[in-house]
Length: 244
Length: 244
DNA sequence: CGCTTGGTTGACCATGTTCAATGTTAGTGG
DNA sequence: CCACTAACATTGAACATGGTCAACCAAGCG
Image (cartoon, rainbow over all chains, first blue to last red; front, side):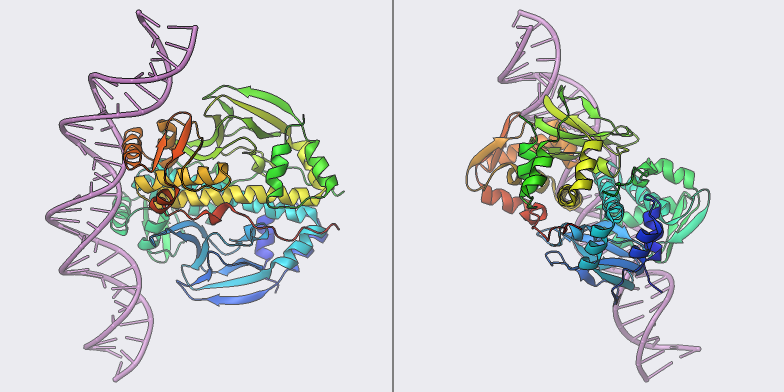
């Protein structure tokens, strides 16, 4: 089984591909790495000659200040390619680390670039993926810069729910195996305060989290608390780049 | 004078282009808009059919929370194209606003896409520009999430210095006509506290700012305060996408 | 000269941090 | 099955950073 079928589905959410183009994507393959939790499989400063495809597990993009404080800048779930931008900037400016044990497919950049040259529409789809990623990063700047602790946590949960659940509404749950410490690093707050905010959200019967999953009890209220507007990672199909 | 010559220079910092490709870029043109200060010339939610090229003035990408709080997510200076990502996501997820009176060239996306189809290397260069932009956004997440007020301000000034000055060192100044309120919105803090931090940086003879420019008195100390590492927006040339 | 924009100040207050201790849970070897 | 351990969650108390409010100042410009 060629693994990136799930990735193709992701691309097709925003870019229609012909059968040839789809096959070219499906032929992509690479080395399958088992990554133990907490280990960094891409380090800031490394020169990458492959892009990672998440087969299973939860992965985070993280950076460290000069004083060693960690900031998580994005979470990635199975089906995501967290370092597609390496196609354009092979020198990694952030690290990728496994939040849980993870399985990662390393696809050589050379193979990706070959497909991009032959099928410009595939290049466009990949570029669009990186644009969505950038759009999410912008929303994180907003989140950390302008929202209160409670809003921040709620917003992060909303984002993950929107990405992982088909049409979230009412009560549902989804896999989000991050520790409270991880959440704290993602929202720019201390683990202690993070814990207290989660407690109030739990007591208000809005959402509950543990190391396995998040259980949303009231999607509407959660969105209202967060001031969540999902439009930022719903790209619209544009015109295809016509073949020459 | 076709305006984007400065943009070409920017592209060539990371991607070598043939004479034909350069000419194709230089032929790009569009309507020249005079944008008065404080006005939003791209609004979140708008559907864009052009990309903006900054001819003069200081421009910011900004977003607003559901409660109307503004976060500035990036600054753009003459020679930048702040909404290149519209090529892939024509639905704007953030606003662009003029911090000072500005002059903006609106290049139709259709014209850009034509050049991209004909010259894949140009497409690659543009993609690389958006990747650098994303990398800067990530650094802003780090900045706001993990650094103290003083570190944040220092870091922002370091970033702008690095982008605007050839080889910063010792004492120098550069145009950075943002108000203290703008800086506050960019660093996620209140104007009052921002003012106090600027005062201490001034009293320590590190850096001084007014509505026209920033004057760095001691680049080394400023970098040390910020924990600044410029590698994040220095892309390295990679292989060119070979012609088919 | 008066208006407007932006910078500065002080006093008080709120949000979130730090430190240090204690619970809780799941996994591991005996 | 139990003791032991490690990782994570929870708690309280003291504290710090930065926010809010409200007033005042300074410069530029018609």
